[in-house]
Image (cartoon, rainbow, N blue to C red; front, side, top):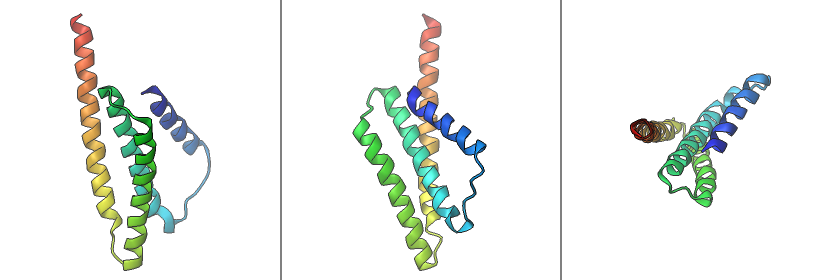
Length: 116
């Protein structure tokens, strides 16, 4: 669980320290890609805490989620529909759900250690 969190922090620090600007045309794609990546990251952390982590599922899920989200955004742009909003909603709901479960697991572990 430490490795994904470490790379998340490293990515945030590098992103804040560099002066890279993303063209506005790609902002929808980037927002969906970031949400998909965060969803996969927190899903991996959750499965690690539950003892169910599988590296191949994590890596394939990461690339599949990011690719599917970018594809939805692309199709939406071609059709003139804000289809990327569906992906944002889906990944946002899953992200908060995973965070809630991670919080519960961490609280249970903390309370169990506190009792001992």
